[in-house]
Image (tube, rainbow, N blue to C red; front, side, top):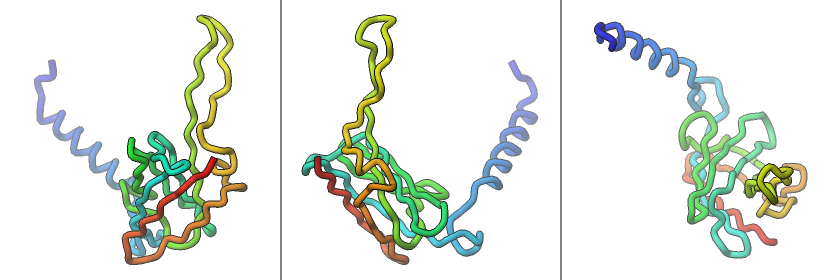
Length: 147
């Protein structure tokens, strides 16, 4: 049992301060590209796609926005902080959802993960999902996939 709670509090404050200093924000005051809020719904053949990963790859720069979809296929992107959106400009959107493999029998060889999304959507080089994030607005960008 720790008897010196003052020491624990000082350590907690120091850790919080160190973590907050190391976390970048999104905006011109930080000399980072401007972000705008982005949300939407991912569907495959009209059915919401839950538990998928969505990534927006900007045409210029390396600051990717990413999110996971909920059970209704809804997502909200984060780039630098929680749900701050994506960098303003043109992007290629990528959607991934893989099913974890299980061995055919106990102790058996583990098969490769199986994708529930057609290959063209989960590779940046082949994704047809070209989108634009506009400044100063809430961008609603739905991603309808087709098998």
